[in-house]
Length: 201
Image 1 (cartoon, one colour):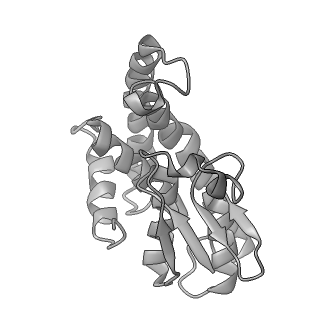
Image 2 (cartoon, one colour):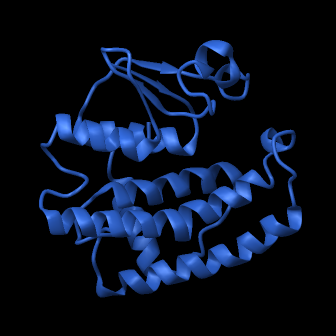
Image 3 (tube, helix red, strand yellow):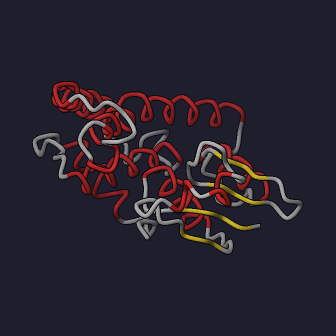
């Protein structure tokens, strides 16, 4: 196998998954900023020009971060990050989806409409980015309320891909200088807990 990755939020999710499970895969870092993900060679691996991509030994390419994580979890079931029972798998899926929709995608929308890198790729709307910034504060408050039961991690008090998705949102927030409201004590507790995991790369 070979992993094609980059300094970007979705590759971060797979990189963090690998680090937490102590899985080592030969890796090629693609420089998105220099257009390497738009080269003919890379587009033959993923026609969308997006990362990450996992190349299997038979030449099959897997794209999309969660699809890659699911495949790797099947190959390396120890230290499960997607749940070891049907109920836990469903709960982690639920919380990972919530973290995607409520936090990760909101942060991503701000980046998409403010980062100069995307200026020639979409019609950026600064007013939309500003509205998403205001909405994001409400989303963090939602998460703070959810964590008010005192649990350390997002789902069932066990570190999982739901936490990794949240960490990817923090990755973008730090890059874009998007502040997490400091008064949210439960979110702050969660951030402190996930930072103890050596998955930041």
